Image (cartoon, rainbow, N blue to C red; front, top):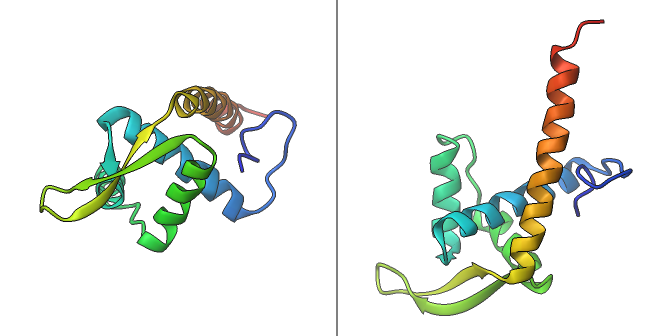
Length: 121
């Protein structure tokens, strides 16, 4: 899960870091924009990253299922802008709490990395 950001935990694999980072980005995107379907989440992450982050559905949908199983998001069926049936995901109260924890942990870690990169000696 969040190996990189947990207190006194170490990074287990590159996949663990990516999974945790993806979870954070998905939760934040839903928090910012409200209920979204998977394609809209993917498009938003691509837009915000200026094309650097292009998720295939084989990466995104397992993340959405994992977050839903953990009770952090809830999916409901609805119609997209193109009138197609789509599952829209929204944050749960537990998801909001988890997102706040993850944001604080990320900011702590980013501060540490910044200090290390810009310190002399």
